[in-house]
Length: 196
Image 1 (cartoon, one colour):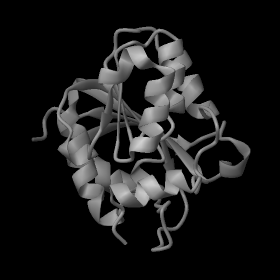
Image 2 (cartoon, rainbow, N blue to C red):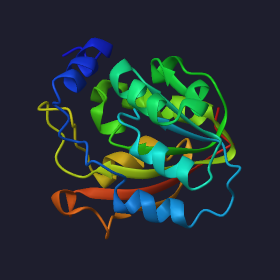
Image 3 (cartoon, rainbow, N blue to C red):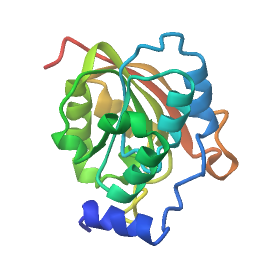
């Protein structure tokens, strides 16, 4: 299956967006709520309708950027936040350039073809500043070809990320929204600057 911009745009146009919870989910909200530094440069890849972006902007994190393949959800975000249109980027995450302090992961990793997972790790590493972090959620259910979303396991994620990141947190999310309870791992991975 080719999960290209047309694929994702059609999902939005047809409202076939079962992953969209209509707002920021509890684990990400609570993580953001404990961040003191409002100057952090933040990226949200695969932002969709931008619930995390909306929450960050409303709470003073003005240096937040989104990137997504599909134009329809990005237009919705831009309509809500016209002053931030230069931070709302239509494009392929793997082509994106920039340096960030924090990248928020929310249903992006699990939407990618699993063949791209090693590329995802390398790209995340290259986009982060020294001591930059990935934080958010990864799904925890058996990896099948019936995606997206594609699953995975704690063991797989450890193996995948450990050479490029220090694993600060990789544990069952205790505050998942009800439909995802027991199926999410909360992560904080800090860039390991000893790797290239």
